[in-house]
Image (cartoon, rainbow, N blue to C red; front, side, top):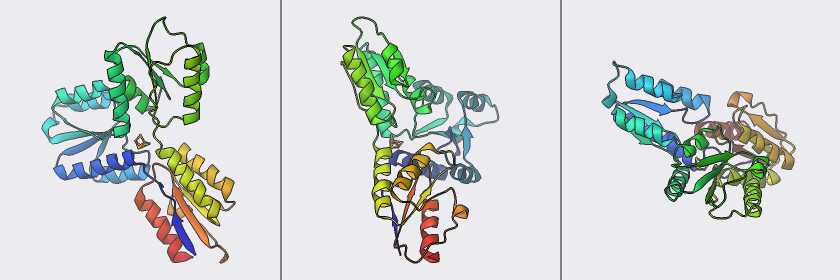
Length: 290
Ligand code: F3S
């Protein structure tokens, strides 16, 4: 039986980089905090917490830390996760004396720079994405002037910018490409095509495409990821569409396979928040037991 791991399974480049940054920063001897959970995976966060990494869940948590008279600021460091943060958070940190270790994904950082520059040029920044997502909140926080977030084409249809206003349109990195194009077309039809920057990251698309390619050939597919992870659910649906015997598991304990000998190829893929360690455990388990 052949066991094949899909390309691009698990952490994307930006998340891996952020998790590695936290691991490296532990050797500094400082007390390490992350601004928000470094990745949406409880076991990764729990493992880091055992190593002494604390999570600051909000600006208030950060301010409480700064105001705490018992905390020696020079002995602390806060890691900014891949989603990035508003400029105000980095300013609070730099004034506090606490070291700021910026693990913002370079693709997200690029958006910060684009919107910042657009602001200095007097442009109205339009962000296409989920208003409540931390990445979008971060991008909003780098806009210097006018900025509006749209989640759906319907909202854009109702939008009437001021006459003569110049726009700069960007998107959240994980936004759907076709939907973004559709929205850009609505702006064009309204007569606005000044500056559109496709800031969508293709990590999600690559992961889905690789999973689909593998599922087409596989007799059995195993999809690893969190129960509430929407990108894992999507991966499962894609694989199930190509391979009837597709299993969704959160941990190795969920894997109760009874594979007939006729199965030749077992494919494995994993959602964006699934750590490598777990992927390897599943691979080894299948290798040893079947
Ligand atoms: Fe990941 Fe960075 Fe893309 S965090 S999804 S590689 S924008």
